[in-house]
Length: 523
Image (cartoon, rainbow, N blue to C red; front, side, top):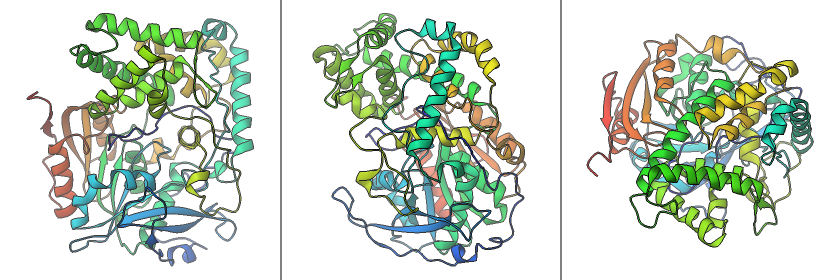
């Protein structure tokens, strides 16, 4: 789940599946005392830094790469290059602080370039480092091509429920598209392998311990790293804590419910303004949103790219705009532009995916130029990683039996986001079983204490996941209760920002169970 740390939108939880032949190499392995046979050459490398190229790259940001094995069981064979970027420490350096912005599927280099000002304070003690995980951004990006057909046909959803076989055929076709347009990294994607990559990066950066700040999905990655390499954990913060145990189907319901609550909060705010495109009555505004979705699904609006903007595209744009209260004014203007002028351009900036750039085809594991990263990479990587991390696979008979019940359950959770989230969950159908390492092994961690931040009004990672994950981690977990809104706390709460910085820079932890009030309480 991608954290929102700037006022520019980015992508999280979309559809598109991972590929057949998924091999989660390293799953179920015990904690390692050393790099392992054949891995010494990867741990012996040092990053060569240079100024980042590109018009949008800020001055002072340096770029480099770290090479890792494609397959950790065969480290002498193919390799991958991972893109990394850093802001150098300005004060006395403790080493590096690695960031993961979430997703899964979020680009770390681009996000650090865009939102670097949010982390400048941390350069008082660290080189602040972002990276594109394997399969993401410039690091051998996966793709499913330009097509991403909804298996629940938005123009005839009832017929889709009545004929689940047609849904299964669409899911198989989508899987074939991903295999066709992605490279050899796709069968070796997933958080267990990324955690191993993270340890190679730690050593390549010259650090004996991993200092880490992970947002949303980045909390899952941090927890997996801590279970895999407990003796290498330094100061670790997990903000917007992901679940380690809930199946994707349950995550989808929780996500739909959280997004519906965020939408209602947004509409309550919007309808206080006479310029609100949904009117001035919150109850009528909720009905209006549903009507817009249904209307666009029946009659999509053409875009400048030649593709139609559907109701589900509109839902995806809403999902992005609801991540942060700072984005609400921009979302209001984008919706007004659609409803008043039929112009989708601002909403397209929120929505994920798109067309206009050729899909990347795998080459030799080297870095991809930024302009060649497929537009669907965030959604393709998101689903590939989520499926790789989830061991549950419904059979065809289960899908046929349960599809109608599942759809009803999701739409009860949210009449706006329900089917959108159900489509994402279904996309793992027919994929090989994912790893059971996360559910079975990421618990009772013997590590230094780590800080877990949960936000009460988070639309993507419910606060209860913070509590549940802290209980699984055990005595190492220290919980900070952020009583605000939005996804994650570091970028939206001054109190959270101060407490996280105090821990990372000075080792000062707040008491377990302490809280931060909402920055908007006085408004």
